[in-house]
Length: 150
Image 1 (cartoon, helix red, strand yellow):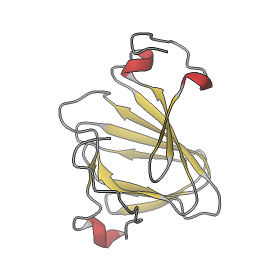
Image 2 (cartoon, one colour):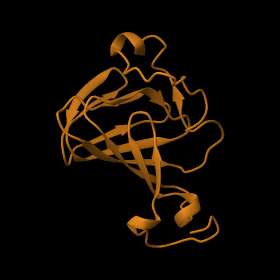
Image 3 (cartoon, rainbow, N blue to C red):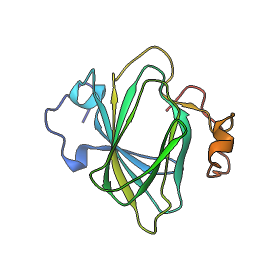
Image 4 (cartoon, rainbow, N blue to C red):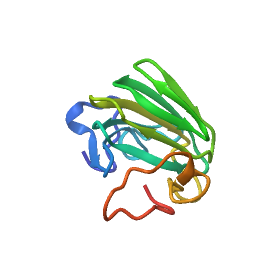
């Protein structure tokens, strides 16, 4: 599939997969694949003990929908345990974090809107106050906080 080929249906073999330090991400709806301008959707698979430390998305709202496992989900300084079928809504620019403290794999959908905005996709804030005190970050040796990329 080329960048110019747009699809209305995405088969599992066409999904772009990215391995991040904390999870595997499968891009399901992007500008490049389906021409989506308002909905960016990924499926994340997070092994036990991993976590996506506190970060925010300037200019984008986000919905997280748990498929399997249990998520320790933070939205700002509020924490909930989310199980399959549960949803978290993250307003534009609000720091949030997802951790898998359970024994099994956590799988969830992340839907962000809009697809494109001015500025960075993600800004890590886990090394800043109050976030570094709210919940200790999972250490990823060699990973430097992102101040403007995905």
